Length: 292
Length: 292
Image (cartoon, rainbow over all chains, first blue to last red; front, side, top):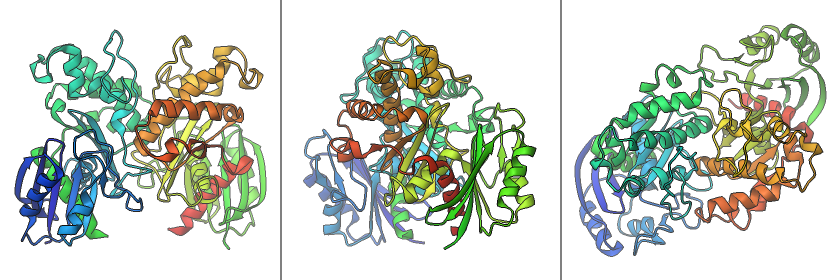
């Protein structure tokens, strides 16, 4: 079986690892994200001498993952110091003569859950992470959904929860989904972090309202076969039943599919790949790149 | 070149026609939608003796277009008398031994615009009609987007225009997009039909608000290469610049693509196939079914 490399390029840390094309990870390491020069040197040192056949990068964004674009391979307008307009694919190509797959971290995670995780055997899925930011990716028929650019589903507008006066914390859109329901939004609204709030705090009904509105839009636009919710905020497991109930209420029986009605507990689920999800995503991207 | 048949199955009338696989229509007829027995008899009479190689049906909905489903080929839960749970594909198969393609009218229209119209040569597009209802379909890489079911993008929730007290007229969701921005919603809110309102009536800024919010969600989730807006309400051409400006304002430069910034007039456009769009959509569906 082919051995593949993966780079989970996060804003806080990089995780590098190798695994087989069935998703089995056999080695991993991680180091903080500092400057491209310092961080990428550690990436090259890790992969040196490893007999891999392709490398996948699941990156923080925004990025340009469109192969036909003149900006392909770049991390683009990130506010993270040193990394704006950085050609990460070019840097790797220069050092490692391998096929490279490049996409967002959430598109990688969606692909890994589709191939090996919670959506294995299904036609499509959507993966959403709720943490410092909110990002999502979708896979339909084995293909990651791309258009003009990668999706930015975390920034859709959602209806305000009645009585919620928090103005939102997205620097671009104020009270979009990320502005109202990310970890920092919870922290700013309640002046406590998600983990400090009790499990029966009213914060969770409000959080479920925002996330269920987003899921409703994803269902009406893409109708994925499964929705997988990960990220730090979703470690609050009490959110799952609240979100499922609210989504069911919002859809109001409009789509007559059992998964959106009495089987909704099998529709909105946690990730299956646990703490390896990010790295598995990068390896999934690499495995797709070998299929081409 | 292959000759193909198309059926635009609307709730008010059926349009049947034949055309070539390059989209050229050479004959058409239409008749009112009454009962399945009466209407389908006219369909069979029209196609009898026509030497077509496949037939496409672009239908009013909701329908079941998923080939692997036990309910494939049915018009499902429509409130239209006589047509609920009607197996339209089965009825046609019984009389005409031909390959049949079956999808929603808007998915057909999206495919026709992708193949022959405003999105010709692009990788993806989204077609939305705003009329008695609001429906939309998307094509990505030549494939119509389906998941659990066909999209129901007209029913997403959108943020209320400030001071709009209209409660919405969607029987399922109240103030979803269709409930707030369809032709009947405009009529109920202003007590005048769209054509009776002057071109500088405040109705149009409000309408543009709702439609631009919907487009923003479609862009952030699917990022189609072009958005084509048709249907009776969009005959009010003054809406186009209002919608483009509002969408540009909402996105606030977040996606750095020229089509979403200074080239937005080339991004949100009217259909290119005019009054033949529905029939062309059905023929486009038929042509895809020959490719398989």
